[in-house]
Length: 194
Image 1 (cartoon, helix red, strand yellow):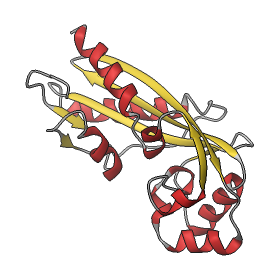
Image 2 (image 1 turned 90 degrees about the vertical axis):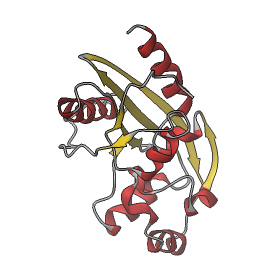
Image 3 (image 1 turned 120 degrees about the vertical axis):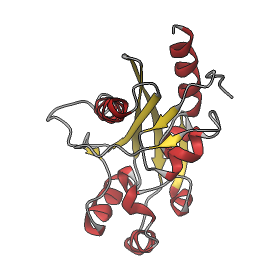
Image 4 (image 1 turned 90 degrees about the horizontal axis):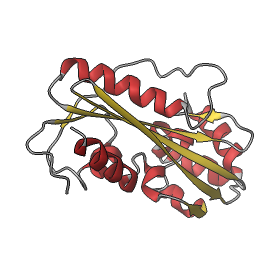
């Protein structure tokens, strides 16, 4: 556990996965989702896009909680063709994303931002994932679980999609939406310079 000396912590996300993962490090925190535009600028790299969105979220929530340590995060999937995949718009978009990823290597990037008393810090974690090929029937079945619709790249590594994951290289929790080790190390360093 991190010792934050009673500093209030706010997670600028409504993701149940991020809530679960942050609780591994910080037992008590508040959740306040940031209602912000998640459109990325044209041509931004997949490792910079989620950092930009995480910082946008953290700054927005920090305005309302000036004494709190605010943590924002965002995850994207970089398809083999370079397309940045966020959450699918609908089931057809989810099927399109899964067709891009199935049978290929791709990278998952999570950007994390901290805001506290006017100071900011960001970092990004990347994980390589190899997904097995998926038949049309398997894709349709997976989409029917409903699991894909609120996840970058239209899959959740920790759920039913795990049967299609051949291997990963990097932080497993990063693919879930919050790189626990990176968060611990960066937050420890960030809070030491207060």
